[in-house]
Image (tube, rainbow, N blue to C red):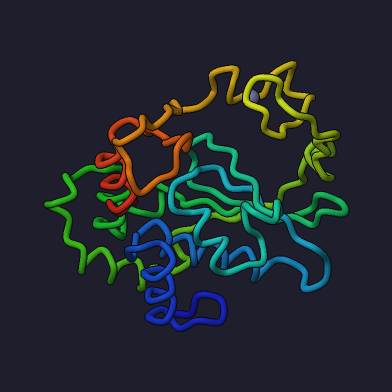
Amino acid sequence: MNVRSYAFEEYVERVRSFHGFAAPGVLIGGFMVDLAYQHLPEEGLLDAICETAKCLPDAIQLLTPCTIGNGWLRVIDIGRFALSFYDKSNGEGFRVSLDPSLLEAWPEIKNWFFKLKPKKEQDYGLLMEQIRKSGTSICRIERVRIAPSFLGKKQRGKIALCPKCKEAYPPSDGPICLGCAGEIPYHVSEIADGLAPERSKGQTSIDIGDQHALLERERRPTG
Ligand code: ZN
């Protein structure tokens, strides 16, 4: 069974290099994208909505022109394993989700999806095999019409200098930038002379709490 233009094994390799690990969620996500595209018209510009931030956005970014960076993919993290593609001119499209009622025939996928077994007890080989064999058959597809308020580009308007940090920010956020208003997970500290000889005086370092833990988290596969 193919995933868009790729043979399944080719897609697994692409997922490895992009996602860092052949995560079950990105593999199943590939079939979900494939199923949506089987129903979507060939003409027209498509946008995407993803209902989880885990795994699924990477399947969309790997297989379609929709990315977070170009704004054609929006993640609404409501924790549902579902995606929609729609024509941005009229909001007409399709939503694909993983259907729990169809997982009875695929127990290892069910174990993974509902986290019924600790990760170390999961049979990864069997899980991969069931994902490959089940393909799009575990997915549900439905027509959707995206709300008009959601269509169209989000304009952020003017750019100004934040009086506190002196960095550029959209003044529609308020009198100071959201970073200075406290919405950042780090604090910036001055490096004292002599502590960092390879750096020039006055340079600042960014202290992101426990950096080691953060790196570990980045390296650890998700899904
Ligand atoms: Zn600021």
